[in-house]
Image (cartoon, rainbow, N blue to C red; front, side, top):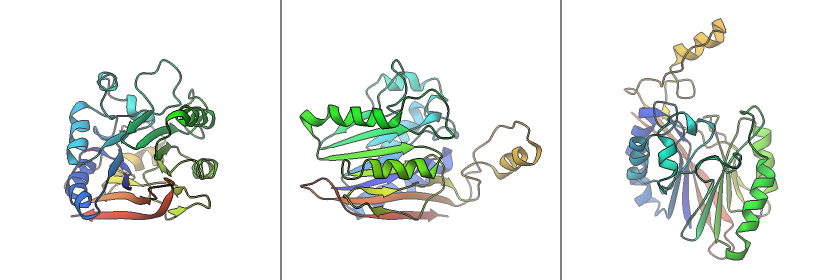
Length: 259
């Protein structure tokens, strides 16, 4: 199994980077599965039918998300449409959508952290244990986890907690790619943050003027996606998994810039 996991797609520049890079990568790397975080795909806030269609048309098989998934009201109908879109599995009972999806021999699980994140979610630790227990009677060959969280310590801890129990644990949310991609001792491929797919000349995908105004004045200001005419970046990791154990043979970063 060769799988690509793509960092948060940020607005129109992110979709442009995806469309410019992913189709070629699917062919060149003989990818079996592509998972992309799309919670910021619609103008930086949430996901719409149009942006979901664009991500899937570019070559993604599954769209994961995080706390911003609810920012567009139409996502509620998308959650009911049986599309390959996930929201964090540890949202309380009654939240629309699903947090786990089977795709052939693989299962994708989406979780959200609780350190420096919106309150109200259930423990990602107990929820992932419950989900993995549900799979015991029909064990998939490969299990991928997107852990959407702010704190690198929480992300790192989840990697070690699931080491040897899942194929891959990757972090999303901060939009800053980390250089610690590695295979943990028991065979789980891990990286603290995939990074971002979006505008290069930005502050984590947003217009620098908007972000700086917040820091300099402490006043509320809407963060707009950085302009789409400049260079765009594509941040991801490629994992190669053993066909018998389902564990990782290798993981490497795949980072590209398109003018």
